[in-house]
Image (cartoon, rainbow over all chains, first blue to last red; front, side):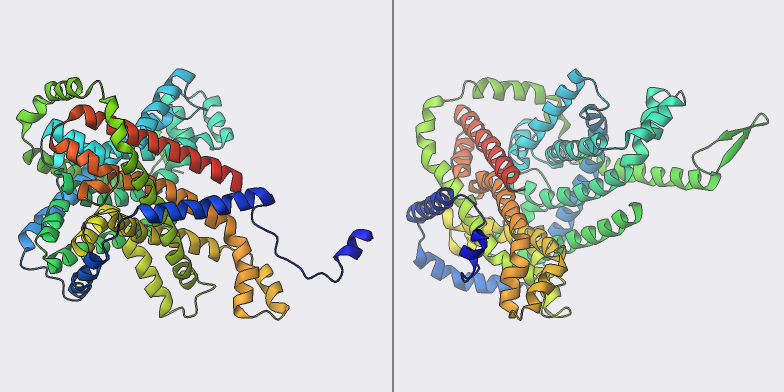
Length: 269
Length: 271
């Protein structure tokens, strides 16, 4: 009763997001101090930025009149190379990541296999595409092969991890029923596990295809093939209309892939 | 149920005849596409270099080890810049992503046919272009440096944050909003007391998640001249100073692992 009495008459206040008072203030003050320190150390050449605004305007205007024709040969070649790298690396990456995902699922694999597969995934996820691409270009030389290997490697980490999580959360009962019918290990995987994770696998594969295409657009910056080299050249030569054309094509393809993946995922689930 | 007659005994089959034929044709087309792609890649490859690769890899490895540890004294400022690029970029992106997300969510958008498509277009176009490309573009426009990196990361993150945020907004519990509306609250009060408290955990999670990704991305932005540790990486690569390269790669790896650990901890605490 007394608790209510003290509350009556006081206006309601929103409960804070962080409950402990000292922690809230410490976070806030630390954040402000950090922001100040960060702003102090960033050197912005405002004169240069102001000068650049004109070029920025030109670039935005270039989007209204993209130039697909004058470098059409280069754009076409780069796009085809990007798409080829995307498709090939997705296929190889998915093919390799399925066994690794099976090995990285604790309810299927024995402990040693599990640890090996998990460490492969960890390495693949920790290394960035562009750094892997630099090393592979140094080793295998310029060209789409380096890009293909990079994207395949990156696909393994992404797909195996998510697929392994899906396998780990599958329904045990169905798999057990298949096993009880006297199935071999391969049959058990094929009829007990695979139908359960197939929708997720298809969805993830298409999503990864989408990511691989986006990534393939930058691999050209370090010489690993694809549209990136053409785009870089266009920027360096201040040919904004060509650059705008390439960017528009990338956006369109990504949108189309996203739309497609939405439809396919709806159908399989 | 498709059943095959095998020596007078019915045997269960997974697919009927036409189904398995369609399946087979699909696989054939898939394999053909892959073979074509592989042939194109192989035509563009100098195979001599590939056969030579193990020797080159061995050579690079012997040059890169051991890392030049004393070089780490020069990496303090680049790492600080990298963290700043990621953090400031994330903050700017979040500030810009919140209004975009509210405009894109079906239940809060002021106009479903004009403003929502525009917001969705912003989300798709910022998301589909990699931050390195944004950095290239911004360097051409506002000159090289940390500032270009911050803006590149910010633009790239808008789409990502806004997409996750508008999905969170669409999934809110409508009854709470209705309750606030019933008290006679204005449109802004409904937003502040009905919607925002519901999406705040999601918002914090998205912010930390994106910050983690941004740390990864900002480590390589320097390759195109947008500041951070990538600048040191590209200059070391250009002079073939492999011991420095290996040290920088180790530092980047450490940064990525630490940021992932921090983000996992914070998200675990929030959710």
